Length: 327
Image 1 (cartoon, rainbow, N blue to C red):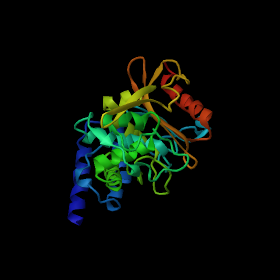
Image 2 (cartoon, rainbow, N blue to C red):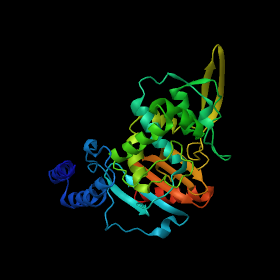
Image 3 (cartoon, helix red, strand yellow):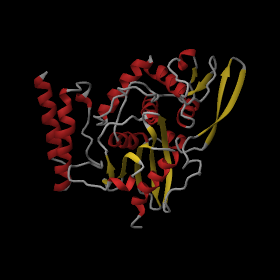
Image 4 (cartoon, rainbow, N blue to C red):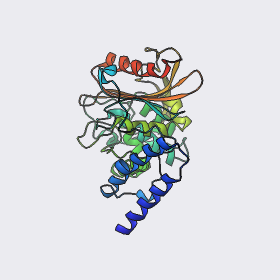
């Protein structure tokens, strides 16, 4: 075991040493892996032999980055990352643990997108989909005993933030919900989300269900590679259909994202392409999104534990304005 771990460390450091990055970036990436990733190999032994080096093409947090916390004063956590030039435009408590609430569903969607071979496949909604729901849980109000396509379940997951939709998808693609959660944690480690642990596929509060701003950036960067995600998470409303024998029914689901519904406008020069909200009492108001400027340059923004609905969007607009302040 020790020999295997030593070999992994050697390979990771060797790949870092031969990267074509500038000297300053190289130092930053080496720091990231030595201090954050490699040190955790001894804590999380799962699948590190399959984890590819992830620092190339990433915005990397380094100890010398300093930002004014007061700029995002109504939220406890925030971060803005540029995809095109790999820069961190803003970070507030970006590596401290937070509760992600329904932003969790970005990982649920990612695993479905990576493992689904037929999005028209019909999946039966059983009673256990509602087994762990709380009184205030957000729902897509799926009908027990009816079958929905994977595509429609993804819309039910991402627009009204259906917690039962998360359970249905988790059971189908993990065999059991608990096994799907194991898959979520393994995938998180493969993405370099070393400060993340999932306890369920929907985000209802659990003490051991946590992540960070930076890890959410890594997740959003990955899941937005899929057009099915960006389309669904950027849609204001959609009709989802279900069948039971010869019976048919349909219903309209609406997004919880105020930008996508155009109730909130981003700073001039930016368009919000997709995103996922979250809320529990413990998590506060949360939002992770991907936006683009007029040149098509992408930015990933995260705001978590805002102290109210209005504060969430005020904080995100303050964050996004940093992307266009020089335009």
